[in-house]
Length: 157
Image 1 (cartoon, rainbow, N blue to C red):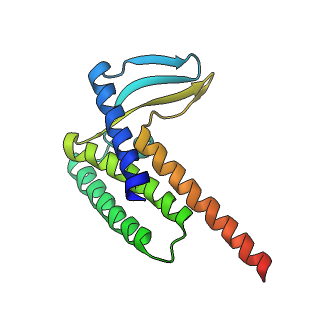
Image 2 (cartoon, rainbow, N blue to C red):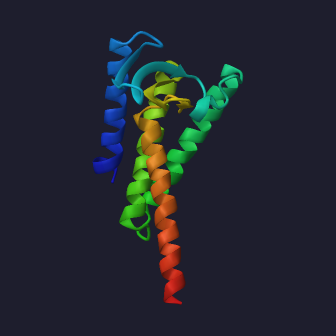
Image 3 (cartoon, one colour):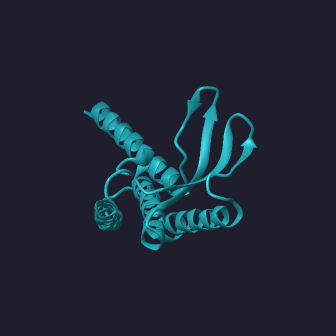
């Protein structure tokens, strides 16, 4: 899972961020699908939806480093367990890849590069990146597979 899921997520995340930083000015926007999807280069010192962005830098740095390292250890242990089903391990690997991708940004720049912007009419979703997407998809998979497994176990009783 590390080679086939986590490593590609980290690679794609970092390469996309390098490209955006090299080819876009901060806050520059380029429509990909006009009225729906833009590349918009932003920097996020906080977490998802800029959570904790207004907290002191020393707090954010320590908090995010601690959470990231703890998540890496926990996800690694969960993936290594022989009892973890492959589909759940793949979901953990997505979350791990996203966590590592954003951790690299925090360690090297002190903030995260975001650039994917979905919007339409009055709807505007916060700008995010490939790592954020991997984390979101991984968590959704974990929830879905757990729910499906619980339903199957309930029917078997």
